[in-house]
Image (cartoon, rainbow, N blue to C red; front, side, top):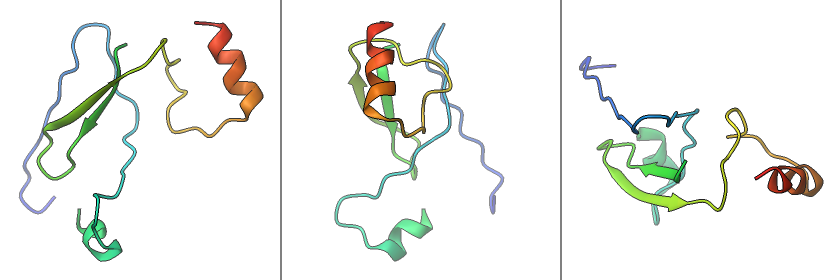
Length: 81
């Protein structure tokens, strides 16, 4: 916001991005962190560079991201793959 810079990340045709989930960097203090389908793409929040890609065994339904579910709800999704 301070600089007005814009970062854009394209994930390819037929791929969509949901809300980001921020994870603390290894060894970072809480104070430091406050400064801040093939699967999940892990993006470094400071550089906006891809840090990792994690392949998933089946499609994750759009809208499922960022939601905590029961074991039963998860099992029902797995049978739909």
